[in-house]
Length: 198
Image (cartoon, rainbow, N blue to C red; front, side, top):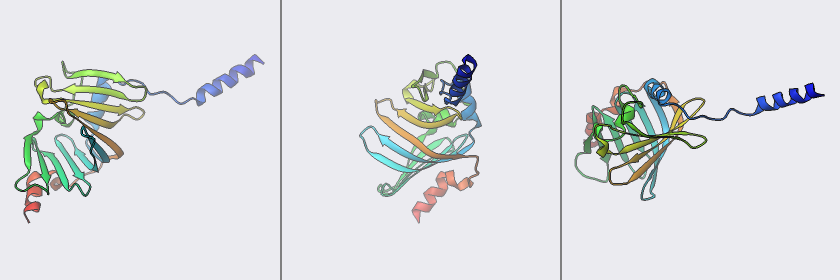
């Protein structure tokens, strides 16, 4: 009888799904460095409660494209060490900022090393996701980015930009696909500027 009871317990235990675990900074760095291209749907929530949706394209290192769905009609491009914000509601050229002044530069870097001194200021686990809060160790005044990762397989599912003024912008990713190739013009700021002049 004992043999059958043990067999039943082993069978039951093997049917229990593996629980997620807190991922190490080295494992997360390796994942980000392996992520060359990605496309996803996104939902962005600003600290004023407004919500926008769209599609996101990433090509590491250094390139990212946010296409906002109508009626927003906005586009954000990161390329050539700059971030350009195109808004059809505004006249004139796009607003442009150095990429290094935004926390997104940390995940778009050629070599991501979350274990670097003073880069990570928070590394936790909520029972489902590993959550890492990072900043530019040389320029913490540029703000922070809080990254949320799922496990098995490792995947970036969400980030929160925490700006120096206390504002928060959350971007949640869905339907993430990786490993594709993109045309060079998809991330070209000058190409986009030329399109909008026509």
